[in-house]
Length: 243
Length: 243
Image 1 (tube, chains in turn blue, green):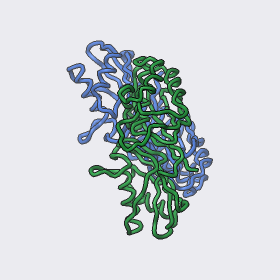
Image 2 (spheres, helix red, strand yellow):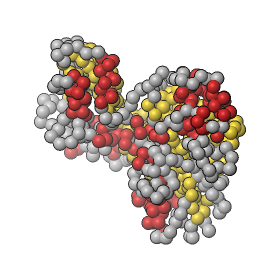
Image 3 (cartoon, one colour):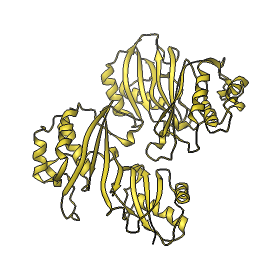
Image 4 (tube, chains in turn green, cyan):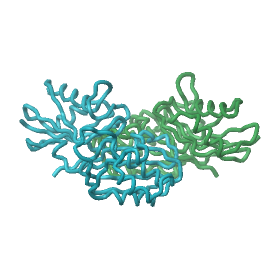
């Protein structure tokens, strides 16, 4: 059976998240519905990275197996013609038969945007933090999470997870004008991990948590040790890598 | 009477425009309502630049005269606490008594954003133009509008305008990744002028209108000679200058 890979962008504001749930509008459901309209048959897709309610994606990847081959360019156009304006299909590509958007992924990259002044234009995509923040301290925190660590302190209760170790390849804060951008790439992410990391680092940046305590929080392996989760709207799934 | 100057940012998506109208939600009305709540008295404000329904602003300026002096910092915070999330007051400043946001302005600057691929994140702030565009031709059009010209060809019917001459100080197209940014600064703008200019230049860029014809369109002094107005959501009032 031919396997296809879809690269998707979406604005998570009005979704309950990627995954289909009993109530509310999910991205997966909308894309499956559009595929069904084109192919006139049942289709199910698998997403490569988790995005919770309100989280955006510029590079989500989905895979699907179809009964018959399709024209990728025509399918991209058809889907974009059928999908609501908050979802865009960037590309549809033919993939190896065994390709699986989730299991074949080697890393995911997320970005979190903080703005330092109140904004109206683009407020759907940022956390407005008007307290003074020491970005050097936040950079020092980011440096500490690079490598393989147990991130249990930054994971919402998740009984499905066999272990809490993640290999963080990159983690950095960049200051661009009045914005602070956190970039993180890892082989896997735990439930709520990026938002818990950002919330905790902001506590360090505003002086509420001493910088020295950050390592201790990681070592405690207890979600209660870390700070509040940063709001969903600042988070974007940027891309997913495959071998 | 003390005069104050407010610098405002807003997302025009859900407004009928800056100006209060019989029906619908206007920015002016929302700001006046918030001022009234703080001051507990009738207040009216004047806007420095026109923004139609759906047009955004990062640097709109409004002025108002009050009976008694106010604390500008406290007023900024109070207003931001009361205003809906699609309007932000950047600053409140004391101004010279004769200051008038509209009549004292020496120039306004607008930006228009075109994106070359379909997008979901940030679609509220851009026109998605997926036809091939020759940006060099569009740059050549922009160069032709610099200086003092009669812009009647780019003005929607406006009986209130005594004349159609505008002095364009700057006009340029910049290519940034998959985006085309049009920046224009002039002493005054006619009704619908930026959007008519952008629509016409896109016609040139896509080869629908020959570049040589652009000067002719300007010289015709007839709105029917120019192209369709570009959609409102790509337009942002960036700033207003005063002496």
